[in-house]
Image 1: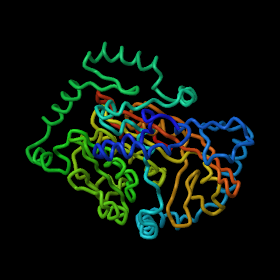
Image 2 (image 1 turned 45 degrees about the horizontal axis):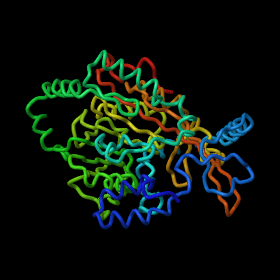
Image 3 (image 1 turned 60 degrees about the vertical axis):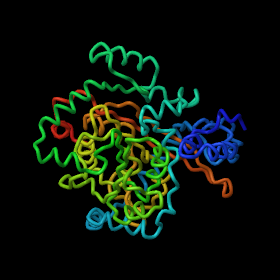
Image 4 (image 1 turned 90 degrees about the horizontal axis):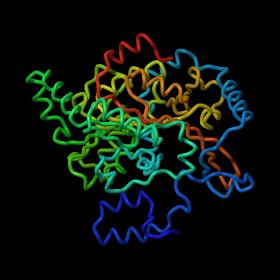
Length: 420
């Protein structure tokens, strides 16, 4: 099972929040970890496919790709009536409220995997303290062309930034920050605020924090509470979370682990640019956008991303994960559920879009962000009892806001190159 020194990452995160006695007890309980690290279970013998629930880094054959395209084309032949499409758009929050009223916080599991896929959620000092391990070499080899995390590129990037920005720049997993420049930019921006805005800056929730995270589409808190648990002993951190379903926000606020001194949950429709956030622009270190953008109409996605980017500090990170094109969930839709190309409505009235890597890259680049990672995560999920195989496809990306402000605003860029 491995020594205690190789205990799994999630257990080590939890251990930070326990006393010394509880810490030792947790370490002994951790012996029941998976036999192999997350993301490194490769199917090499098809006859053993039902020995595990999930296989990583699946490579599709051309025949499988064509079959998936045919299924998607077939279930898209009959579109939802336009008047019904308008209803699903107007009443989107109602359908999600009904979803959370029915399922409460029992539908989704806590996303403890977040810290393996997105260590950038955590402040740099905490990451160093935990000594976050890199992915297994096989995983890194497979994804090496999809990420700026390659050693050579990082080294070249560091040399460039030290030459052009200064020796005070730092690099973390392929993205660069410069403390002096960030401070000067922030000071410049603050200098433009009038007295009323300055007063607002001093009174908003989390105003005294030095590291701030926003989760968009928090649902019942399946990301919120794992994050709060990890950050429990890290002073200066604050977590914002929002959802446009008021029922979901109430579930978060009523949770026993919710603490308004460390977290602010609020109802917000990210599609409405006129709605203010309960904090100023350019104060967030991280935005978490996990399985939420797919619920928004494709015509409104670019607008949503553009607005979110304004909330990030220069050098801040946006972390993205969502459904990929030809995921099993897309291929299972019956005729009559397709709203538009690759956009569907479920039986409960909630909607879902299925992305390609290229669409994701285009959308965040047009918003002015720099790509740090953009990969296609293909896995084989199996039901061993029913002997059923399901091809899962997700898109995962990490995008950084440049330290230097762009000459053109995201809105001007979008006008020239509309997202389609």
